[in-house]
Length: 262
Image 1 (cartoon, helix red, strand yellow):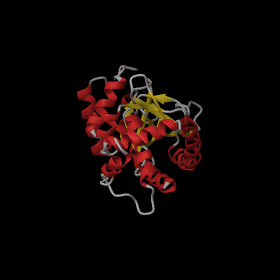
Image 2: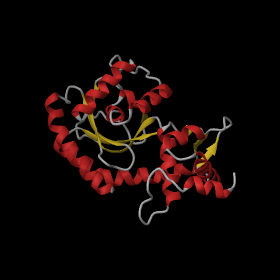
Image 3: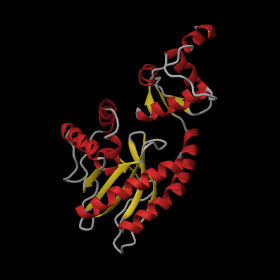
């Protein structure tokens, strides 16, 4: 296909370019996000379907991203996120930690339990920031830990805001392994739980990842990427009363953090 033909296909984009922006750069970053949402690996047809871009445009963007190391081509001829993204991811995670920490510390001061910020990275939730509880008995995860979304409050909060077909594809890739007797491993039951989470605006982990630990989480509205705040602690301390106090304070913290990140 000639360059002239490719430009003709490109002349009718699926959405208008932002004023003053460079459309090809915007599309390249959008494509990387689509691949991340698809689990980190995808073929050209799937990318075209998910992004709404025509195949010639996808092919040109992918070729450039492979040449620069931000994508790599697998033996299966699918495309995977490349190693050059690791440095960017590590730097952005450090910055998220810096920006989020004051908000997390305020939650700990007001509520007493550990506060965390997690991000959907491919098919996993990764904890990127934390302020630990000041109780002598601390129950919290560590920064950098990667967990599956179906068994965590942060993961369920994120999945509840995603289209059902994307959630189904993610669950197909990860499975729904049981970590405790409380882990939801039935798809229908899980989707029912997501409907309730979407309705109430927050998610609860009832010892689904680790026995004796209870967490409440909600998403950061309009943040870069899919981010969720959580408050976690021993189930005996994470009472319904504490959860009721925590949710509005966490919403306020999430809104403030989103404002800082924008």
